[in-house]
View 1: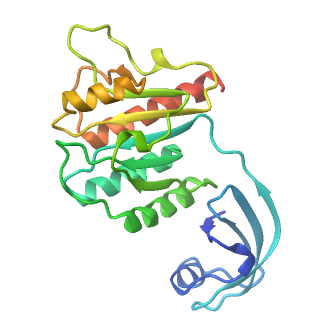
View 2 (view 1 turned 180 degrees about the horizontal axis):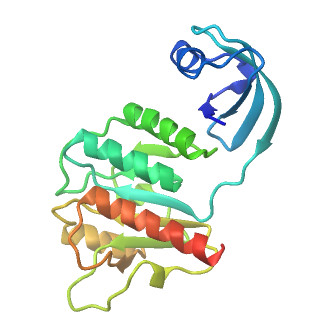
Length: 233
């Protein structure tokens, strides 16, 4: 069954754009079952009561609250030069199941201001596609210290000659949250690295290949999610 998004399902009516998609494209009829999420952890089930393509109405019959994925993954990443690559990044990490996405304009990052409203629409589409009930927060931050420290804090930067530490080697059993910090393709400045280390971020490697920022972010988030899925936490 398709999953739809509505921030206030209690209202019982979709806006015109979603109504047109449900009624005209998916051809939902009166009486058809419908499932939707409010993006705050609650899944609703009901039936279509009016399939008007400008204002499709539905009646909620039941609801249940889903627990958020644990650990909560907070991605902190430098903005990219190309908007389409940032959109791809948001879509993929939301499908993976991140809790929050923070764009940090590091000194060597491209000076492209993230289009947060556009990213939220992409995130909504991604939770619908992947059938999740939690919509991640997406924000622009001015400093790394603007993000609360997590149970585990990781920075994807490992100095040459230091111990080869992968992400899984730094993970513990059942942490509440994990921050993962990904820099720009020009890398962090030494000042930024020192700031992260002072905040107790642990340096890790993503392998020997040099990855683009969006690829590194996806690999890191997928590695964390897969680790805890595999070990059963």
